[in-house]
Amino acid sequence: MSRTMIALRTVTRDDLGPGVAVVGELDIHTAAAVEPSLTRLADGGGHLVLDLSGLSFCDSAGIELFLRLHRRCVRAGARLLLDRVPLLLVKSIRVLGADRELSWRSA
Image 1 (cartoon, rainbow, N blue to C red):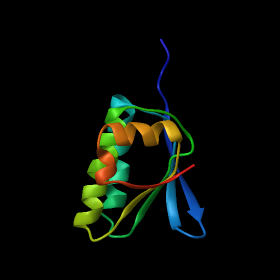
Image 2 (image 1 turned 90 degrees about the vertical axis):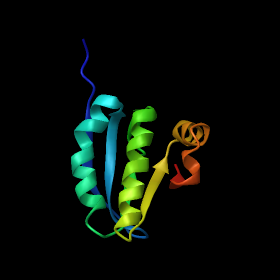
Image 3 (image 1 turned 180 degrees about the vertical axis):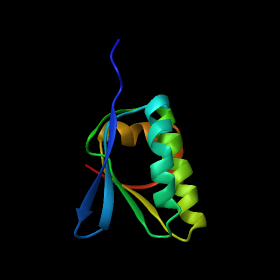
Image 4 (image 1 turned 90 degrees about the horizontal axis):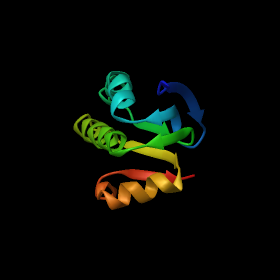
């Protein structure tokens, strides 16, 4: 049985400020594992930039996590930006209707 892995890494973007790279597979199990860390960042009051270029998989649980983070950022007076989003994930975001709330830049 293989183990699903996910990692968060601090990155710096000159044009966006500091952010976090999400690397690996984002599914129901790994979303639950990284949510506490990302929630703390979303509650911090600053903008949250997630670099998703390292995601090899993201299902609806991952997209739901992005929606929860977006809503937390809005409540904190900040913004969530999904950066370098893979094309397949953009399609999934649109199919699920999450594009009405989420902001992103494609890879």
